[in-house]
Structure formats: structure tokens, C-alpha cells
Length: 184
Image (cartoon, helix red, strand yellow):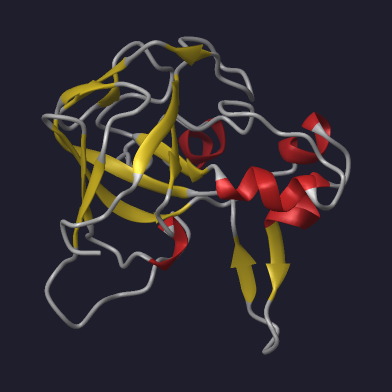
């Protein structure tokens, strides 16, 4: 997986207004240390409403939201129809197990952009408002009773650049020991 992946960008999405879904775009521009240009969640400090209410000075570890397209296939088998951007992600990927990446992984996307993985998205009840029952499909429990979050990962922009559907994604793992993703 280290730099030799066949992963690619399936879709890119952004929205300048607070909305659960984000419209697909021909491209998005990632800005170093900020996030997606023109997206409501871009910034050095937290932008998600629940996080702002807790402490608006927290660093924004959720500048870019990535979801694996394969999740849409999984929820489709349970009767749900989800398309890129509909769960609020900025980058829909394919061919990469995002949830298995350790914290600190660097994702090279396209020719220039690099996103550093900070953690798991913590799905919120708005997912059920989008499609009733979908939250149970993206949050569950494993055999030991631990919570399993499947609604993608979050990252910060390590190096900016333009990202388009079809761009390749390369993976650079951090040094050992790897730290599993936690919710951010």
C-alpha cells in the first residue's frame, strides 16, 4: 500500500453553506492548513457546529472528509441508495481501505495535494434524517462490542493542490508503531 496503490478519486464535492449533502464538482482546491477552498468546513479552527458549540478555538482536524465508494455498495445491499457527496464528504475514493489506515498516514491525491489522516468521522443523527435507518448501517459494533464507525475518515491539508475525479491516490504510512484511527 505504501506509495504503490491503485486507488483513485471517484468524485469530489464541496458546499459553501451548511448542508448535510455536498454537490459534486469538476474539481476542488485543497488549501494547506485550511481545507477545501470555499467549503463551509474549511479553516484553522473547528467549523462543525457541534464542535464550535463545545470550544470554537479547537484546531480543525476535520478539514477534509473522505469516504470510500465501496461503502455505498455495502449500504445498497441493505436497501439504501447513496451517491458521492450525499454523506457530506469532500473526496469519494475507490480502491483503498480508508478505515484501516493509521493516524498520520499521508494521502497524495492528484499531482500535488497531500492530506494527513487525523481520524474517523463520527457519524451524526443527521444521517437518519437523510435516510431513515442509514445511521445503523454506518455505525455498528464488532464481535467484542466495540463501536465501528464506517462513514469515512477526516484529515488536514498537509500540501494544497487541485483534486479531480480520476486522480490517483498514493499512501505513505507513518513510522511504526501505527496508531489506529479514533473518532475526531
